[in-house]
Image 1 (tube, rainbow, N blue to C red):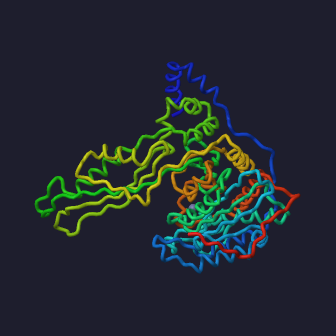
Image 2: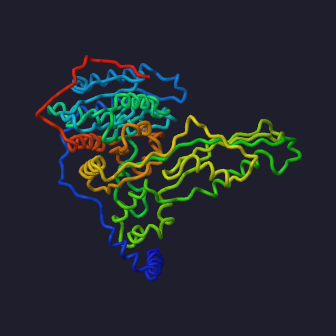
Image 3: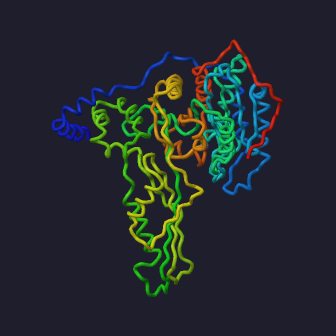
Length: 495
Ligand SMILES: [Zn+2]
């Protein structure tokens, strides 16, 4: 294999030698090293608290009327009891009945605030009987805390509050205002996050940057790379659902026509499967290659340094394209009748650089059959995100914090394929980053909305360390402790 790579490289080098070598030499590591920082003392109750948080079943159902308000309100009270200093010094508002917004006033009014996002709803447990520990037990077994939400995303919410409480206990106040925005229905569209964002917008809040879930300390996802990669996602793909339908003359099954509804739509589906959208390097994923490239061996680096030549070969491995997933296929009513109609639903994730409109145009020209109608579900649609900056103070502070807490990993910007609550916050900041300080392997990734979601105790401590260190790096002030005077349990309702 190596021989093949080397001989193909030799051909490339001999024909394009000058340019190739020039680019490769310019391509140096972007991984800065920072002095080692010891993990702070994390209260041992933190583990117990996460277990208790998991035990409250704050489930989001597709049918939102099924929301169990008692669990959500119990979660609010639980936080009040477990984080007394946070609830004494930060102003807390309840938005859209269940979402929470905390405001921690900083000492320097000239600095723009930052926002830390998390959500405390979870998806239903799916297949409870398959779990090795019950999904709402929070059981601690072999150093692993089991339960729905340990990764997605109560673990992060609890770790943020642990670090705030630790700072307050040490008598510290942030330099800039910090908002904690905790949505209650991220898994079903995030109307809570949307309402929080609207509230902040109405108050004229512009944040220096926003941090949400959606990037990991990922290991084993990139062939040829043994180290973990900490991906701070600077953009996320857009989301679109398209229904295809066809209506033809039905008929008797004893005389099948070639263009019956099922056959027509099936051929379209095969066409879509055989013609995926083009993989490409755009502003949104360029940084990933620039940061990751130099960490590979010399042969692989030549390939990275000359992306314009090897683009197709490398980029395909990470899925940098618009994806089209068939999710529902319906047709037929009776075993001996040719159906007159067939319906196919496509769930599409759009890469930044393309738009819903350009994707629809491309689908139409690929399908090239006027009998097939396309209908876009407008209420689900959102375009790809803007791309956040990697040069500014926000990204640089996050980058440093990741390097300090996970020094053995390679830290890169990246593009997220999924969606997060942060998509509701574009008006609040141009700099939105998606990173959850959680370690992940391909095997773990299936636990997310699947069976046996867990976090190890060590990793949970790293998560708390990360948010604590981030606050330190942003600047914590011990001299002046100012807190906003609020009545305990103040509620502001915004819908
Ligand atoms: Zn989530």
